[in-house]
Image (cartoon, rainbow, N blue to C red; front, side, top):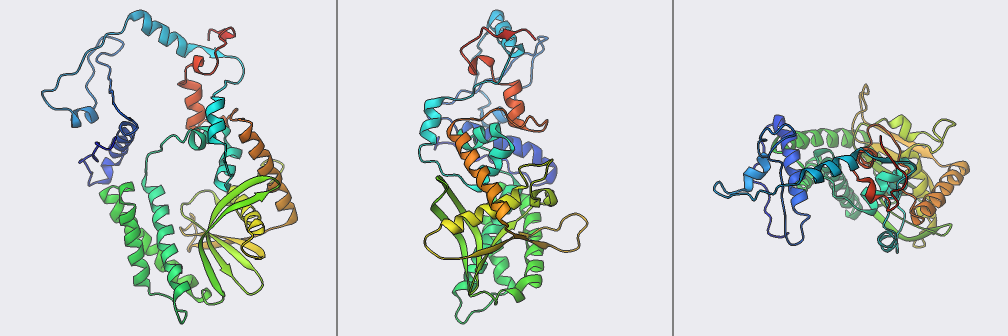
Length: 381
């Protein structure tokens, strides 16, 4: 697949974003081929009317190149459609045991995996076990850019002698380098807009918090924790920033986006028994720090550093999460239960939410025969 080149059709306006996203997805699908690539299309619709060829095919097909026509028997079409209309009682089995066992042989649990597994086991299976490629997008790219710029800026503070804070211009230069590094996530217009938006975020953050960057003894930036176990579960993670004081540390996690923060920060309730992702993330980091043998740090708190204004708010904000014994006990059980479920290949049922693409994919598109060799329980819908 090294012979494929990037599409030449880069768009210049935001109105073309949707078609560009589809083109990227088509290109990603093409690059999955190892040796040969077959591309097929329907020539006629169900009523016998001729269909227009996809523009993505015409973009790389020579004008005089002829396509092979393959006729499919009506009986095969009927059998295929009949298969799609069937359903099977009970939960389908999606798992190739031998394959999953190999993937999980040296598996370590991260908080991202834990959050996803608790939310939807089926999504976890497709995205973290099968590792289905996901199309790049501007939101993901911008998050990576911001982390890149923050990482390099705080490293400069850490290595300066005497300790000093780089200029806002320096930070914006790191932002620009990050935008170039993750350029493929953006259309031309998105690149321009996110670059300006990033400069506004950095300027506000710089103005609000620069007075706080001399109180720490030092920072640890993008701190990796790999060889830690919690109650027999191997756990891993990378912490955006650790502020080191004389008698304790606090962990900082940068967050872009404007998702419902109150829910993600919330501790478990009788209605939401698992609690919010951000709350769990900070508690998980406490287990990483406690298990890390390289230091004897005492983690007192975690800080969620929200870099974009929430709707209705005038400024960006930080949320401090203090960690209680009850928090640690709850997340400890979640870690153990999730790890056991993953190792036991418990990837169903999914969340069942209407907007979950993976639950809907399994429900609507995966042939029943792929779930089980036992067809005795099929029923007509």
